[in-house]
Length: 67
Image 1: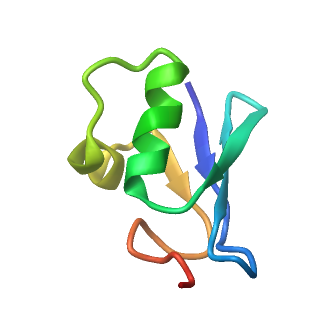
Image 2: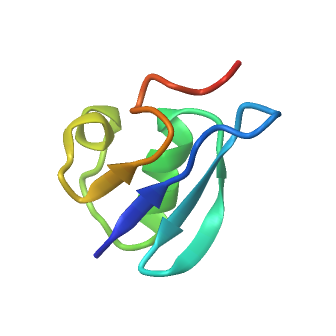
């Protein structure tokens, strides 16, 4: 599974793409956690999102939200 988190947009949201499909726009780690649960990753939490090697962060890491 390949997860891409794009740079923050003008509203502070970040697009989330999993295996080539855009799942939505996240406004924080909690949102990414929920999108990943829906994509089938069990036992995912905010720490997992911050530290996982599955996630490629573009335009800043898990601390960059633009708001």
